[in-house]
Image 1 (cartoon, rainbow over the protein chains, first blue to last red):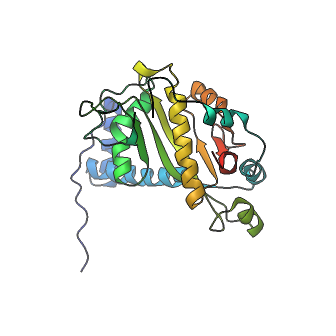
Image 2: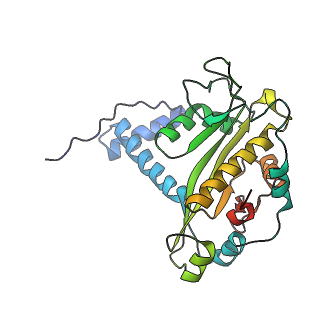
Image 3: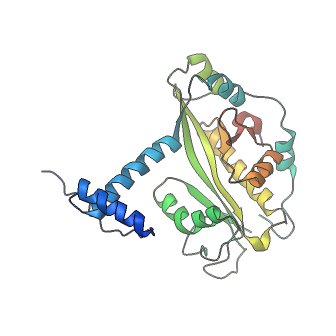
Length: 95
Length: 170
C-alpha cells in the first residue's frame, strides 16, 4: 500500500513587494490552478535540493584538475599554521 | 571555558551578535536545525560553570562534511591523497566562525580557529579527509584565515584551504 504523502504543516513567512506577489499569483494560476502555496513550495524545494547538490558535492573539472591536486598534495612548510598551533589561548579564555 | 556542541536549552542564541549579519543569522536560525539533521555541527565557546542558563555565547564555529567528486581520478592520485574511495575526495568545510562583539579583539577568534582546525584534523586523519576548506564571508575574514595558514584554493576563489597533511601531528 502506498504510504501517505508527508503533511505540509510547517509555515514559512516571506516578505515580498506587491509586484512580486502579483507575479507569483499569476504563475500559480498557470502552474498549480492558483494554489500559491503549492507552487512556491514545490519550486523552492526543488531549487533548494539543486543548491545543496551543487554546494555539498563539487565536481573536479578538467580545467581545475591539475591545480586542484597540486594544492591538496602541497607539502611545503606552513609557518603561519605552525604559529597558530603554538599560540596560547588568550588570557581569561582558558579552554 | 568549555567549547561544546550547540544546545539551545543551554546556550542563548538570540543575544549573539558578531556584527556580520549572515554569521549572526546562521547561528540564530539555522545552526540547531543543521545539527538536528546531521548536516553540520556547531560548537560554542561559553563561560565556565557556574553560569546562567541559557548562557552567553562568546563565539562559535560550524563544521560541515564536504565532498569533491572526480570521475577521472586515477589510482595513483587516490593513493597519494590516501582517499578511501576512488573518485570521492572528503574534506571538512569550516562553514562559519564568529565572535561576539563584546569579546572581539582579544584573540578569541584565533583560539576558536585553532580549536576548529584541531577538531577537523583529528576527524580528517581518523576517518579520511584531505583538506579543511573555508569560504570567507568578506575580505577581512579572508585576511584572518590567510594569516593563520589557509592558502587560496586555485580556481576555486574565494575558497581557501589547508591540506590535511600540512596539519598532521598538530
